[in-house]
Length: 421
Ligand code: MN
Ligand code: MN
Image 1: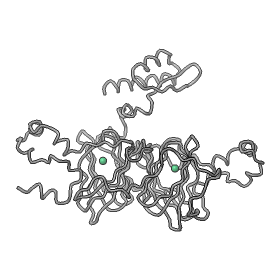
Image 2 (image 1 turned 90 degrees about the vertical axis):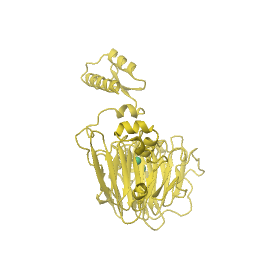
Image 3 (image 1 turned 120 degrees about the vertical axis):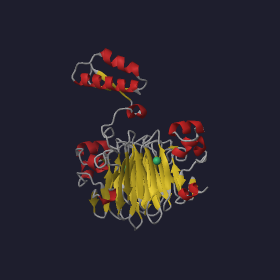
Image 4 (image 1 turned 30 degrees about the vertical axis):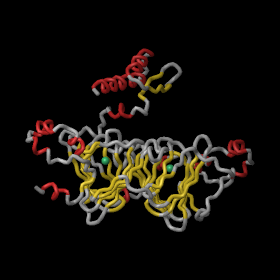
């Protein structure tokens, strides 16, 4: 780690030297020898400098984050549904990015509602993949991959989709009732309002160029929108799956749809249950893992951390208390109500407890396609009892009372059980 920081510092120095025009070829060479993965960015014909490739996120994670190195932990909660967002007619998109929630550098989220007949128009995202969970109503999507394969899918409540970064897509409300879904993006700097929309693009290209592009008269493009439509509105789409303009479909090798809540939960406890989908079950979802966590009143998702990913939380219903441990005595608790968002930076200790009267449901996204976690009870159970005795300065016999099987979710009676002789 010390080495990495030294390399980072050196990199910063070199990058600033390059920007000032003082860099030499040997600087770049020396740097590129010091780490394994490098991306070369051409600055001019004669000067280039190197940066670590974005794929090596563990390396980047060692860079000090100014939002996380203060004496206190920053806020890790944002009241998403209480924000206004972008509203057109009866449809809206509300977003939580680093702008609204500065700690959430790794993941952004959007709550989107579409009224019947509304469509989130054809667009792509240059800087993020999109994962979504349908909370209410029905949704139809069409997505195209760079090989020209396209897939149209219909989604019900509890279904999820994943669109790789840069793949063109649209989302439309299916049927005569509104739909509501939560979008999760693997980049906290991503903004849903800064995506690449088809009307925005075509509206800025001269008609002569469009005419040549499509082999059509210029007049075809008369009256096309000249700015981004964002939510297009007409009548609800046909119920039967329509065929494409070109006719026959070329299906992609991997589907973009997964029926998450139609499956059995992977983990069931007295205090709650969890559905989890990563790229093992849903292969195309290479950069995002999704979880639905149901907790009974008093249920507790035990203290744990994720070594390889940050965590983004959205409370679908109920109230939870989320705790965050950030080393150096830094500890913070937030109460999240329905519609609120929470964020846990990669590697930070945390827990989620249902503090409401009824059950709660939390939607969770991780910026990894391979879920990993270490739970506190499992960590302790994986150590010799003398280690625990020495570590805490308590007798070894005390630690023999500790659980040896994973807790994962504790129920409201857990404390009473512990106290039984
Ligand atoms: Mn999108
Ligand atoms: Mn977690």
